Length: 257
Image (cartoon, rainbow, N blue to C red; front, side, top):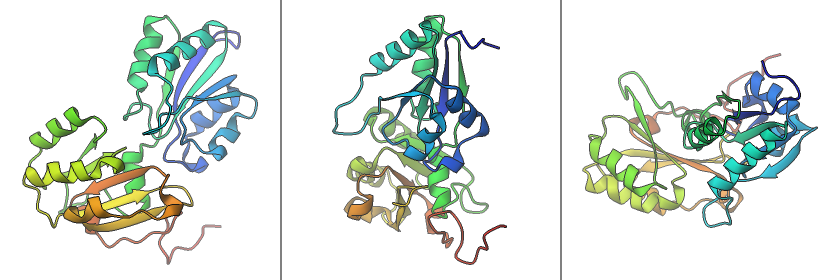
């Protein structure tokens, strides 16, 4: 156990967006924090758990000014060396396209004590909240998570994946949807493969499109959801007839007392 005077860093996953999706440990660490370095997409409702902390937004959004990763790591190290309890708060899970591994290595090399507090990864949660299971008996026995933001890794993964064998989940890829579709079609994925786009999962801006792979790149996102994060799902599970509202409940669901 670290003492209250000792510097310490918690790499915390905030889940897909709604405050109720945080783990109990994440809430506890936010309440104990002196400093919270958070992603741009972390909601005010989540940040409210850290009422006594200083906040610093270090998020990365496509096409906007960004805080260099090296700067984030230096801020974490410097704050911990000053004896502060720091939360590095990331959407989803810190180790799923969250650069949590890079920060963990930097902290370890600097001799800073830290912990990882896993979060509900958006790769699974966003499709689930839209009624899309990433695996389904008789339909898909597994799933692969990619990001089209890293073109080399994305292309290599698609090249190694037989068309239609597994569900493909693409994060941080909405702006690259056209290139992703072209890559999949060139690799032999049928144009009619079911596809879905989930925007703003776990927020009031939730919007879902379902259709064919070939049409994915031509989807027009409504203005009220245009700036929200998106997740792409490609595979037969995207066609399952499961309809949920923005809270992840079916229309016939009764609210538990």
